[in-house]
Length: 298
Image 1: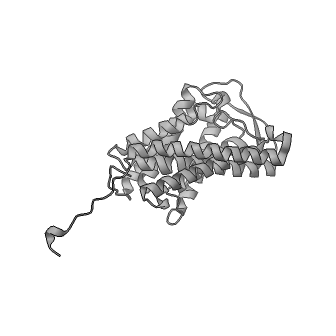
Image 2: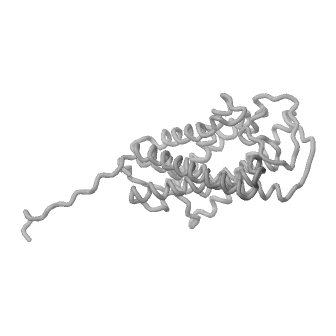
Image 3: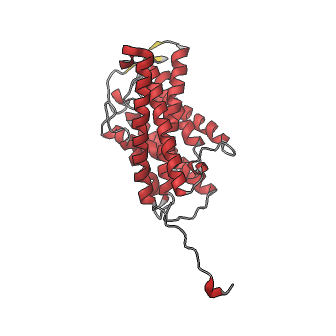
């Protein structure tokens, strides 16, 4: 065949990254509405009038529906983008240590943070109770919370921002700000809790810059919430969902103990998250395990 008869095939135009994220959010909300209606119908069918106050069962179903919605939206978008599901970073292979390190960091944060709060007299333990079923229910609930929020904020949104010309730390900040905005309607929200939620988003996303994997942030997020609420007795981002092992008393609600928002509303938490984020970035910059091109389309 003559060379001049060869017609070069053009690559099909793809949706730009800046359009992928808004479209993903729209698809997610549509799916969330659909699954929410199905979950409410299921609760009404099973519980009848009690469906108005379903307790932990309702929370688990709601969070399960949100997780299913974000997974559905991710699958749809990744198919449109011709990208594999593995791009979300959910693989445990080669990253199992991240689960262990996330647990250790959560424990260390509360050993220091809660310990300081006790020593300074900002919180007092006023009671103790052990209810295994409540702890197991909380375990499932906060596992779903961690999966949902990490797939949404780090796996998809931060993952896509890192495929642009944006500086990786700016991408991290944008995803962290969106993570904080996700909690804008939480009870007792205020300026310092919002700042801390941005810092939490940066702490959770820092390792993803270097590993493109969710094992560490998933584990840290999960144990952070579970230890904070069901075990230690704090409010979790302003919410009080269930009974707790420890009963806490705050002589005065202030910025040192976080007040009604919980530990995440405290200055102690602010300092600890900044220190831990810096340590993760220092570790990541030393390793430099990931080298990605930065395509301008999905």
